[in-house]
Image 1 (spheres, rainbow, N blue to C red):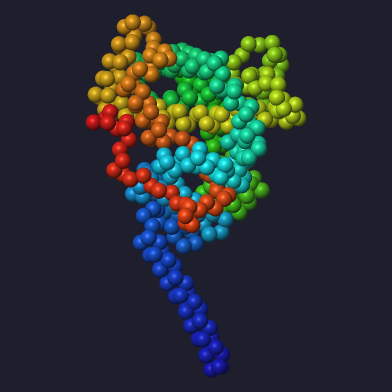
Image 2 (image 1 turned 90 degrees about the vertical axis):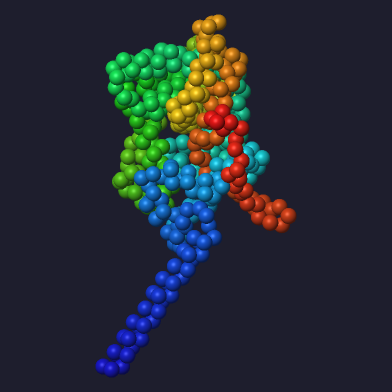
Length: 411
């Protein structure tokens, strides 16, 4: 009996020693990471997950503070088992390096494509290499054609005068508050759907209706991003059993794809005999290799869905910042109004080059788009180990002392 007790005590001490050692290693690793990393806390094993959990109620403000503290760039790491890892950057030089200078070296990668495959399938925002090049070749000439550019401008102009202004006037007359960001989101959604599909979804109607396609698209994008926050075995398991967020994602994606499929099918009926300038109609008339493919309809659907994703949130966020900046800088608003009045006294509206000559308005728009960085986040995975002078290439954060020229406007 004494021998058994001795063995039990020895095993207990071994377990406690192991537990203490692991705890000490955990704390030392966390302390070392905190002392050497200015970015968000990356815990051993669980990575950035606890930090995100405690800041989820103000995630964007927290991320902005982290970027400011780190000079515009920081590393992140998810769970050790199946978690993501990468770099978050808002430094224009880094973004140019990834998206332009060394674009071929930074494909989206399997990690990204797998998570967006249900919504975007093989659309241009979820493809790499030859598939991406084929789609880009097919649409570049169309999107830069004079007729399409004029159609896009006319669509936006009509949307503003016939819907947006009437909606705003109604709320001003009623004296009721309205969520400007929601209104601008509806405006950009209707506008991009007209440009891509040639279909008016009706989001910007005066009574602000609930549009199933718009709601499904919003849910699909939000639920897809959920996959980036959890380990693969979690979302793949819930997808297999069709429960939780994955079930709602499946329903939302089905609504989005059904709308796109119906639009493409309807447009195929007599599209050669109609004079339409939306991108879907123009792509149908392009006599290239894509038109001979068996999955041409699916290709058109995927592209239009990707285009909506590109033009919806980015434009509305930039416009929201635009009006927020005006609200907080009344003297800038005065300068913009003076420029507009100088033009409309000669004619009813400003177009083309006249708009570009409005210095204050142009600077503020560029500031909202370029400095605020409203671009949709698209993870990029490097496939080549780049070396310079024998050293790993690292992202260089922009010094905080560097003030963009546009900021001069606000002083």
